[in-house]
Amino acid sequence: MTVFRLFPAFILLGLSFSAGAQDSARQAVINAANAMGGVAQVEAVSSVRLVGYGHEAYQDGGSEITTEANAPEKMTNLTAYERVIDLDNNRTRVKARLFRAFIFAARSMMQGLPINQVLDGDIAYDVSADGNTRRGSEEAALTRRMDMLAIPLVAVRAALDNNSTVSNRRDQDGLTLVDVITADGAEFTLAVNNDSGLPHWVRWLEPHENLGEITQRAQYSAWLKVDGIMLPMSYNTVSDWKDTVMLRLHVDRYVINGAIDDLSAPASVRNAPAPVSNYSVTAEPVAEHVWHLIGNNGANSVLLEFDDHLALFEVPTNRAWTQAVIDEARRTVPGKPLTQAIITHHHFDHTGGLRVAIAEGLTIVTQGGNVDWFRELSERPVTKYQDALSRNPQPLKSLAVDDHLRLSDDSLTIDIYHMVSNAHMAQGLMGYIPEHKLLIQGDLFDLNWEVYFWGNTYDDNVAYRNLEVERDVPIHGRVTPTAEVHRILEQQKGNARALCSQVANAGLSMPGCPLAWD
Ligand SMILES: [Zn+2]
Image (cartoon, rainbow, N blue to C red; front, side, top):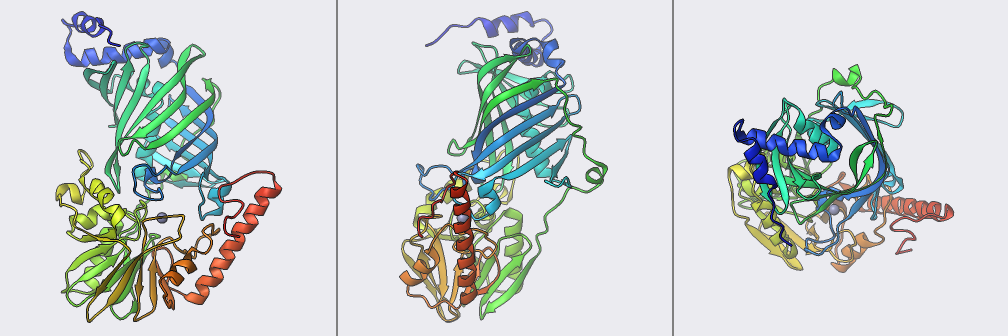
């Protein structure tokens, strides 16, 4: 249905003498505040407490079982969710329990991990269960600030602030859009619904390791009046990548201007520098022409030396870590060009360095089903948060593996196999170096995992390919003899059994229970 609207023309005429686009844009915000209960009423709110539950995307939607467009999202459930906003002091805190709505290797993420995340101005900090505080990174502060601004009352308050810039008013599909830049530099677009006059969504941009940038849009529904202020009972935040549902939040209760805790950062946090990750890499020899590239970043790579070139097995975690891995590979074997990166699977923690690898001109060796997806990641437009690939755009060079690919010369032979029998990834690869009896794998086994829900996939893959593995060379963990792999796997499976009995005894349920393979 199309409705002819006089509204925008009226605003423009009304302000024609004082002018301007700024005023007209600001008026759109004033209208939204009026629809929410009045400018004075909105500005008089000093605190908001929101209680509810919901779920959020795991790895921003980059962790499905395959890269197929219809692969269902994996979600993390949020219970006991509480957001407190101290509007007078520009502070917010989110408390919740997080648990995976899918099988996962950390016991706490199956049982419900308590989080307590605070933002005080531009300082992010976390409070642990025993009350200890720890400063968060600048990236965490940015994310928390934007998540707070995605609450419509906060967005409108920020836009009403005289120190904010509000501009670029335009109409789009029954909405009035304005761009807002706050005094401290946060940028977002506010859409106001022309029918209700209420905020319709808030949209913002953040840097992203795998995607270059990600746009998120928090959309609101089910508006109710709480103490004279209109607030939404439902939030649905979707990203511009595959329309991934980033957050669905169902509100049980709002409290306006109730007593709230002091959220100010304690001196120990305030005086601590924001943590910066350490990206130093060590090349540990594993066998002739094979090095484990390790550091304190949680995910390794493996360097393979062929006659006339080098290859990396995995470009994990993030762009800076992978850049450090690439630099260390070149230092370890100077004089041979690094030309290939073999990637075990598409999950975002394993492809955080994909954009850097492509910018460095590496050919990406991956299971055939992943190629289009990797191309899409590499071609995403970047407007604000430039990285190596956006500064030096390169087409994706790929070498697709169907079931098996052997890379071989006089220096090294590696068999790359499509993994079978695995509920974590269906387009995964593992490597086997027959001469040294090395299995190179990511997410098939990790000695740091607590509970193992994946049954016999490790042995199934080894048996299916008739491999004689002596040592496991993991992306997560350390080089491990096969006997130790089996010993730890049995412990982890035992832990999964114990957890499932605990769940059954409590009359509750959990993904993965009862165990499918016992
Ligand atoms: Zn994975």
